[in-house]
Image (cartoon, rainbow, N blue to C red; front, side):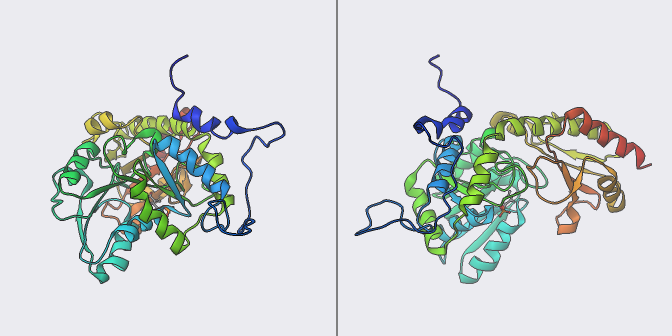
Length: 369
Ligand SMILES: *Cc1c(COP(=O)(O)O)cnc(C)c1O
């Protein structure tokens, strides 16, 4: 009985601990922009841009999963923007993944390059040998999207530290259940909670987390001044989704593993990327730093037409972008201009029973002719 409860148990019971007779068991949505404030401010709630009890409860729950402190945002990009706007100044250099989430580079190119911030890029797989000299921030995304390349977070953290740079890790694909970048030496974690954390394709949200409160200060200041505040209704949806995060992810990860194996064995498939496959170039590092290999598999069919037909014909696949939801979804990434073959598909596994999903994939591939 001396064993400490896991983060999931602590998350589930974080609020219930303090409840009194007659209190609601579920989290109340405090839909109030203003709070009673007579006399001088004294640290209590007074205005929604500065603080809201529903949002703060959800931040505390995310903090339990991260083993740190978390600041919530209305989207993953707002969370990432808070780090860039909080930290980058003219003359600074930032090193960022060249093969991860595209909008991160677009934000830097649009808002920061014109004011004199220098941007260097590097493929995820090469981050451990990248030149970090003179960098203010280094940003990694592992596994990267959509190619699912992996880098050794602990090694990258060591090198970033030696170079005097802060390491920011986008942990959207793995989630804190699958990987703990803060344990491995990252200074800040950013996440799109829109994906698996909320998990039902019904809300946009994001967060920044750290073990060092001081590092979150510029992030909090930017949030307050720029007004990037999540709505308490959306914070509630995230809270509700996180309660089942571990359950959903264990099914989705098992589905992805089984799907990757079935795809690899099928003659219509020319390549499969999944860190869980023992012959994948990312497997050794992923095995060391991840628990489960995530819900996304990417693979390549003969051409775009075949790939579109596969997505359209499979009854258990929704043709949609994004991932981390309860339904399996897929898309041809060439439509976004990614540097991938024509027939490259990103398959985002949902929580369907594994046998159903795998047999639907195999049947659809068989029918392509
Ligand atoms: C979706 C995503 C984001 C952006 O999140 P939004 O909530 O859409 O703003 C950032 N990073 C990664 C890896 C993502 O998948």
